[in-house]
Picture (tube, rainbow, N blue to C red):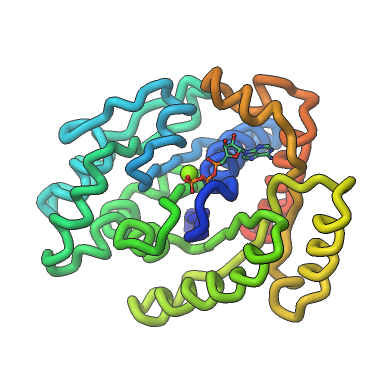
Length: 274
Ligand SMILES: Nc1ncnc2c1ncn2[C@@H]1O[C@H](COP(=O)(O)OP(=O)(O)OP(=O)(O)O)[C@@H](O)[C@H]1O
Ligand SMILES: [Mg+2]
């Protein structure tokens, strides 16, 4: 079964899109290097801001006919085909495919609110095409809105990026509980909370080191902890050039850390040796 990883945290700006895009490309590249029979990865952007779409395709003008919006509005029987037809290739790598977001997704939440079965409108078609891919990565918006619920219902694994700030880490348990609520409320027993990634870490900052230690020692969060991404300004430069961190600067500390995280995820989530 293809693992479907959803990056989520209702806090804004914690590195969900940066992590989703670079994990997706990192998986494609590492699987290719391992000689895996299939190294195609699908990135699904459920955030109307479309940041993951913009950096991986160079476009932010997807709309009614060529974005996730079209899939969510499609007739249920036709949705898998519509999904397959809507997916585009990333300019980052031919084996990285993208289901683009659109600003219209904001309105789609309201339009779908009263539609029966709305929360499953991503999971159902995705389950029909996921086995074309070695992995699917879903980026979500900074809230537990209907679209984020859709992303979690479709997932096998939830990954939570978090910044090393006191209030963020205090709120982390409530994020974990919210994901568990969605799993139980929408009956998706296969959804696991598989990792917490601490982003934008500056180990010269005492508070960052302290919060990292606290997290690692925590009963539940310590077990979920799966990686640290350093604060690295190359990330912003890479974004502005619509490049991955690996291409922008192969030596960048954040890129090295994302590759290490991909290795950890392959062991932990995919159970593959690297
Ligand atoms: N490791 C890093 N080092 C430095 N800056 C970073 C790092 N990761 C992300 N950023 C910057 O932080 C900002 C937020 O990152 P990103 O867009 O990935 O967060 P997000 O959680 O997806 O945000 P949103 O909640 O708005 O969707 C961006 O400007 C990005 O360039
Ligand atoms: Mg984002």
